[in-house]
Amino acid sequence: MGTTITATRIAGPNVGPCGMEAVYELVYDTTTSGGIMTCDLTADFGYITTAHIGGSDAANFYFVEIQQPPYTTALSATNLAIGFSEAGTDGAELDLMASASMATAITGQTLHVIGKPALVTSWS
Image (tube, rainbow, N blue to C red; front, side, top):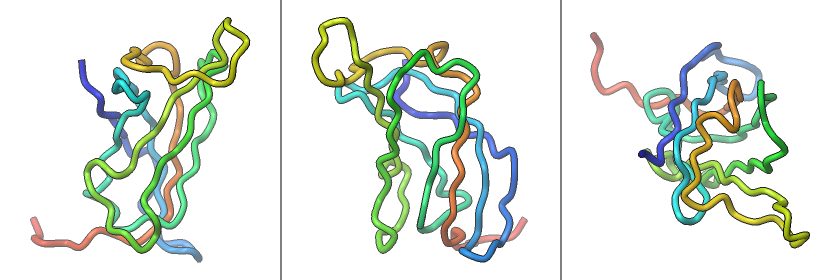
């Protein structure tokens, strides 16, 4: 059981008019007790300007929200996160999906990111 999203690059990184951009397909695991999972994109990005969630093969009416650092804060392995909520049957406001497996609940979702590239520290 992990709380980290597996992000597989499916497009980019390319330099566009707003900076470097890339698209990732996301594979979810299990949320934390606060209803989030982190996503490490530090291999590609040093800073993020914008991030957008794309469609899903099976979303099952969950609310998914990106929690990203301000564009002036360097990206780390844990400060890009996605939070998960649902309406539930209690008729109340959105409830966090605490410690919930999202692996099959939401599949095929994409993340489109624009920002500054990560610094290259070595060349292979």
